[in-house]
Image (cartoon, rainbow, N blue to C red):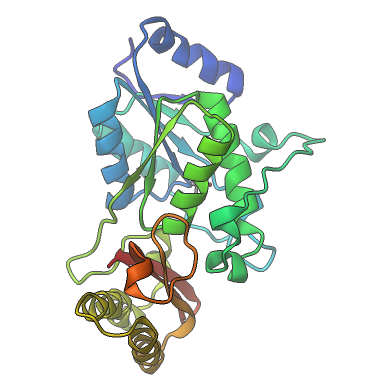
Length: 283
Ligand code: PAF
């Protein structure tokens, strides 16, 4: 079996490349990405390597999860650098289809998730997002047929939506959430951090600081509503435009009123200049 990085761009060549692993009954792990890889992605790759003989990284900037006014055109694309990093990490296969291969003329099917996808949060601000994510991830699961698929906990609602989709549609894949990788000042790694100016980059870790303070205060018995209201004001004063700061049930993402309704996850999304940042922590 190959120990040289293979790059495949069509479904038939993907199937051919995976065939030897299937014949050998080797486990396959998929790390779905949109490229512009950073240490957060590489943590997914390490976890994939721990679990499977064959690691596939998909690189596909998925147009259906961006609204027309969003950053699809300017989303960071560093394919050559990504390949170099993946080669060093000794992964087996890069699955990099074109938009035309993923969504050929006449493509007419969408997966529309409910449950965690319809409880507000990201869905309220990006209503197109989870339909696009679920559709492309369902396609990636069908194309690669992985035993394991690794997603970052940084996109916590996405992780819950994809986990539920795999369960509901009896997809034979174990979805695994990998803890968020952070800069030393707490900022969650994200390809979109590249958009931050120097001044914004200095303010950005505040989001995680507020999340942690809120989590500690809730753990210490303070009322959830009060703690979140203080957190919202702090985020506002730091110069963010807040989309949401909420406490949700960690699995269903249903709204919760008191810490007794937990386990609780705190989730936040806010804009700093033109950059939209999201983050979350467990309570
Ligand atoms: O998290 C991402 O990078 C994307 O939403 C994903 C899961 C690769 C689907 O396009």
